Image (cartoon, rainbow, N blue to C red; front, side, top):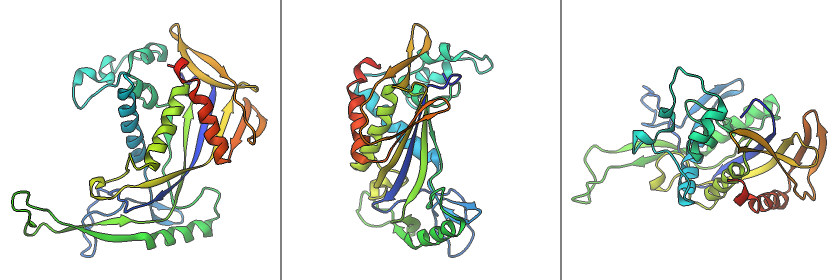
Amino acid sequence: MFKTIRNFHIFHLKITPKSGFHIGSGDIDISPVATDAQFVRLNTPWGKTVHIPGSSLKGVFRADAEALLKSMGKEVCELSINRNKDCGDKFELKKVEKAEEIYPQVCYACKMFGNMKMASVVRFEDFFPFESDDGDNEKAKKIKEIEEYTFVRNGIKIDRFTGSTVEKALYDFEVLNGGNFYGNVLLKNPEIWQVLMFYKTINNINDGFVKVGGKKSRGLGKLDVEIKSLEIYSTNKNAITFTTFENGRFMNKNVEFNFQNAEKEEDLIGLKIKITNKDEIKSYFDQMLTKLPESW
């Protein structure tokens, strides 16, 4: 599926917490002033900083995509429920199958997000509180600034029978309540429905249907995801070349779109399109939606 380049969709995203937000580090800090659950941090050349791991985002997007696919009557493997429905168990680990043999046998979720035998179409970066083109001083400044949005929140265990607090059950955890995170998500050689599924999950997050991070049932995890820009690279100079799977092999599907204000230029592999206008981005996905029935 990835041996031939057909298109890249690169989403340049800005993520802003709209409520308390927590992603636990999982590390144990022996400091007496440390919280019971600290926000995940990472050392960078500009200082140690809170960040959003790409793996955390991928889990959220895959879970929502699986729910959407099942609601549309599409097959989704359910490893946690039935081992016999795990797409990864259909193949011998030591045997190398061709992508053309694997792809038609796996569920729609695995087609999009991969499994132990097939790479993911969707590839997430870690998200940081600075942009990649910021200077060193600016990155260090933004790392210090985002620490101002961290605070400690207390939790307590409630006895479900008495309705009172359980003795010695007080704990605390670190929460982020503001700031911005920046990063990219790349879709390599997607089918039309896969790009639409990714876009739909972004809307679900913004609408509050999907929350991110830990302790979501306690009011945490509401985010705003803004598409700052969308870059599309296509091998066809007059259309967007999507992937389609027909007759046992991957093929090109050239689809024409009407772009009003997008930046276009010829690239080494064909055409490069950059969309920054929000209405133009929405128009692109609205046009793509009309192509969905024929893309399954």
